[in-house]
Image (cartoon, rainbow, N blue to C red; front, side):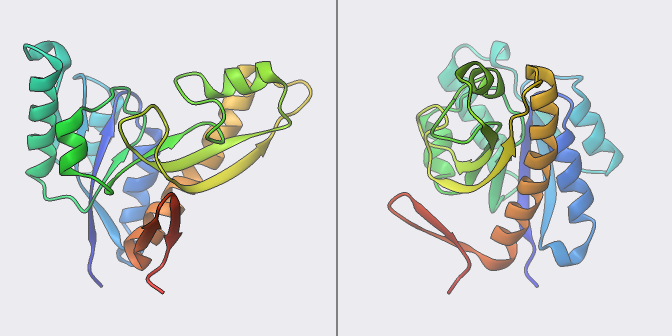
Length: 204
């Protein structure tokens, strides 16, 4: 079996990264994390990678003269590991045009809402404030917009009457983690096609 090479980008604790690392320990998963990148040093996600002997790199925006230079450096750092897929797992920076051009159709993100509803940084909070009965998580391709890329997979999480933002977020995280691992594994093993905005997993 050909193993798909993953570069995972993080900005914090890396719980989604950990789930991918654990899954990739099984050769049958079909994908392996070959590097982990972050936008700041000393985040837990980098420590998780080190425990699995996975190479890491850091690209801080403030270390570069402008966002274009940062985007070029991030692109070069990722490209050096020859990834088949790049996974944004809690990466809190918007990449630029150079990165998107280099990895078009290979850069995916997990978002804690059912897109296209509630994009941006506060999906669960916004869903709760709107009064929806179903929240959830979305895996999607990244484009130049904010959470506007083609949707790969979604999972629904019921909103309970007594939910707070924190309780809802925690339940979404559990479903989101499971979905991300399953989706990345299926993409690795089965491939995917995109027809306009419709993503289909599998080669058939």
